[in-house]
Image (cartoon, rainbow, N blue to C red; front, side, top):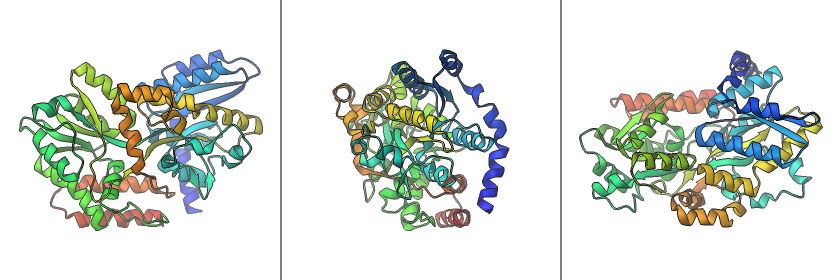
Length: 432
């Protein structure tokens, strides 16, 4: 009851955000709405992120609306994943939630267990058109909650390493890239020139920390999701890798809400030789690299004792409480957005992983991989993919971890054990 009361208070407090959500749209939502015709089932679809990702969403919705005459979808941009989730929670409490939206995969469990999203199991069982075996198995770990299907993989990703190979050649580095932690440190040292350029510009982001804990042989949480597990030898090894490189001056670590953008700008402007980011940034970074006049290549995340990488991105979900007509319309829209042809389109347009095996094997994608091998790296790396934690309060755990990691990076006098134990104590209190 306490959890429920807290959630309801949070939702109500965020109602004002939901009220102004439409103001972030680029105008396409109004244009789409104006195109709607009487007699069609009207759906609203909320999505995160702009630039190429936003264009992809708008383009696919336009394709869906033009592909049939019974359903009309209005697409609306809602900011980052955190902003999208907050607005969706607030809108659900107010009774005006979108029929279809995105859940960042670590939040699938939060929305499902709070009753905000629809169990899709029966839709799959009663639909002969959809082939669930065609979805890449490496992306399905965050689609189920208590053995029930709550979302279909849509714009999915893994973190990958980007390297400015123009700078790498100047530094005398092998363009095959670093494959281990030790080689990663060596490359970072070689890129660092003492004149403001560092080897790696990194935001304090839990996704990358999850990757390095897994590579050290550990995990962020225990198997049943009741307690955190990052305050371990493996968790310390992963944190100390970042911390030591930061202290040595070969890695610039950014904190705060703009940390990701700062790290990206450092890389794009030649102030860092390497960059960790989602495969979703690939098309955009290739475009920026061309504009800035440097060559860009992509690589697996460097490996520790193990070769593992967390998956990321979003699944498409249907909000709960819809009448049967809107449920069926929402299901048709979700099927369209995750179908083979649309999956291949989105992957080529943005760099996100093709979530369906048939899309990855299609002639279109194979031609792309031949022309631009940077796109294939994340697909190959998916063999090492692991699901993200989906504990009900994991988003709160993430905030605690980021706060404590930031404190530890900024103040090197605090022992690593104290940083992680403090974070674990606070996180476990939240989980209980």
